[in-house]
Image 1 (cartoon, rainbow, N blue to C red):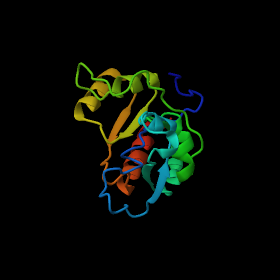
Image 2: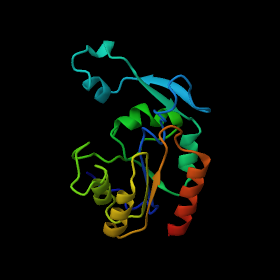
Image 3: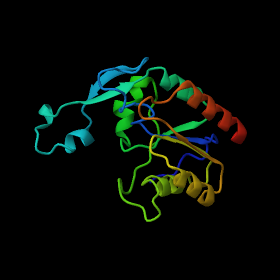
Length: 185
């Protein structure tokens, strides 16, 4: 995993895709207001269906809000993909919401159990942040993750759990902006 660009100086915004940007658990028959439907076939999605020829793999549905890209870029934070999509987020998600290519965390292992019951991302993202302040936006953050980060990360950190039925909302953007003001250099 490559550490973040320390020249930037802004706190990191560690951003998950499914849940915060793609409210995948919204009612299937009703796209959330402000979201557009996209059908995509990333290589990782095709690989999950090895028994099906690539051209016949049913596309993955994404609901993305085009207002989220500009809103994320307006925050005084350095956005980083913190998602299983890894670099595929730069190809399949970012362009659809107006984000430039972003750094991403290349997970050494995904979806593994943790001896302390932490989310599988928690230890790796703290190591990747390399002591920089960060806000982590994800739909699977639990209280034990927040507590572990507070004990093991030397810089300020914010965890922002987002409901995977609704995605990021105005209040979430306001909370991120408020937190960023408290840690800005």
